Amino acid sequence: MKYLIAGLGNIGDEYKHTRHNIGFDVVDAFVARHKATFHNDRLADVAEVKWKGKTFIVIKPTTYMNLSGRAIKYWLDKEKIPVENLLVILDDLALPLDVIRLRPGGSDAGHNGLKSIQESIATNQYPRLRFGVGNDYPKGRQVEFVLSKWKNAEMPVVQEKIDKSTEIIESFATTGIARTMNECNKLTFPAVK
Image 1 (tube, rainbow, N blue to C red):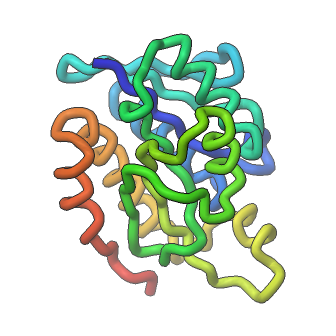
Image 2 (spheres, helix red, strand yellow; image 1 turned 45 degrees about the horizontal axis):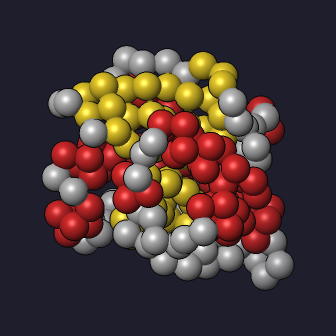
């Protein structure tokens, strides 16, 4: 069984560890947990993880967020992975910082990465793990907010959620999306003090 795990983000040092790049941070943690490494390949940095009889092709698209779909379509086709075995990890402004949500599909909700994926693979029915980043920003400052770094006070929650997200990736592949959703969608993480 093969899975494509795609963390969304933007390449470049100025974007590292920003809210918008949390997808990259989660897949970095997943790959490190399994002692694998990324290498640069077509349209993405790619790592392969083998675990419990499953093969995870893990990608960080190098296309920038707005063209994430190009990389995802390429790697789905190249590795012959069915769309239900795709898991996209992304930031979500609509969710508070203390939650993560696993969904089997749905709208792009204005997220340019999801919009690009939907256009490229011609469906919005693919699993995604939405990592709540909160929406604590003044009106009209949404872009600045998502491209900003986490506050020090937020880091313990962010780190705990990253760790949990790596477990969710494993559970998605071993116990399936329905059971994994039941477990992770009711979690809340300690409030930021």
